[in-house]
Image (cartoon, rainbow, N blue to C red; front, side, top):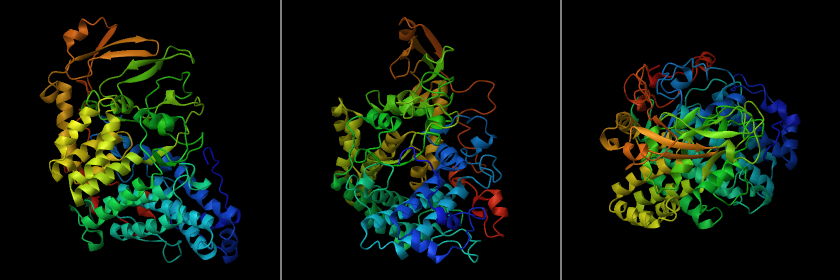
Length: 600
């Protein structure tokens, strides 16, 4: 399905799924159309295509959700962070405005997610009525895919907006205007839907339909169910304006950890996905568009070559058009500068995840070379034009898929859940697999580390908090993790201190050199000064061709980098951890929608 043209295959079905009133209203359809479409496999396949088309719309995942949800944290920040009043920055700094220029449009990601949900609802109804799923495995697989894709959209709506309108049936004239629904109601529906979907879906590579990571498999559905269970059992800002756990006994914390544990163990024991021996290979495969299921990637949002802005927004910056790319993009979101120093020097993930350089050109399209950036421009190295097997020619999109879940996440979710239920000794093997891969060639360091973190449940939990940051930097999982652990405020406060100390070379960073020293030879860059133990004296005497002061702010900045992380008026990011519903949807909701719990 890679490079699919997102043309709706619905034909007669097109009248069913279009015509939404700001993605809320849908016209009636004839029973004949539905009976024909959902009893015919080739036509029913269009249901999945139609849902994915909603993901790829200009202001949907492609240009809005992927890039803006997830910043700012102690792992990732928006590169325009110091322009605190800019609409892009306000999407990240916990002071988001309801009339935000990036989002307050009728076709933004809120609208597109509900468009996709409406298409899913119509497909689910049709497949249940006419798909004969009890005896037709192909139609059952389709139903499982649609249930899972709807769960993806609802879980991402909840991550970004908290309580959102629940729509699990096609819209009617009576249900056009629906208020926010307690997310616990939605969580319980999603958990039930994914349990059902797992019964229909095949494991990766068990059928031709699950041979690609662009198609939903049983492994991904189970992984998503584990992720949603951890969200449902975690902390969040509620309508009563408190940050707390759910009061619903069905979503009690231990019950949710039990679901997450079982789903992760099912995946692990299936042997259908695996941890690749090399961390770098995971992301080279992504950039090189390796779509074979059964490796580490479990599901990817598919983008055609002319859609998708993964490297465009998330990747290593290319300042000019060069031999690797026809677009001078990358770096809208960057690594939090302190993240570089969270990694040990021996951790192989560091050089893959963060690059302390960008790319520039000598003026020809065929020659590119690396140049150092400032401390405030540490790029997300998991996404690189230079790792692709084709040269990007589009001016607006790169076509790289978004890797939504990978097997390392399953291992760390298993470790977290098992620690809570059975203790650190039982959980340790799952964390150790991730550590051993990170320290390949230095596994003694991994073994010694494991001995220090398995002494108590608290110590092991803290290790999971740290490990998920190291493993997933740039994958936009950190914000939701911090929210569900109720660590958003404390980790951002801790990070602000780290950033200020890093800038002033005080505290833990007191012995770092003030400069970096480097030699550039074509596409070969040697840098000194990035590690603890490096000194200016050694750098100055090292024969490097150039050096520069390594800083993230300047005296002319109106706001320092660390103070720009959060502009929340209450100085509590957790009190505005969600985006508001945008003004255009408030205005068209007949008074049913509001942002009262955000104080807006």
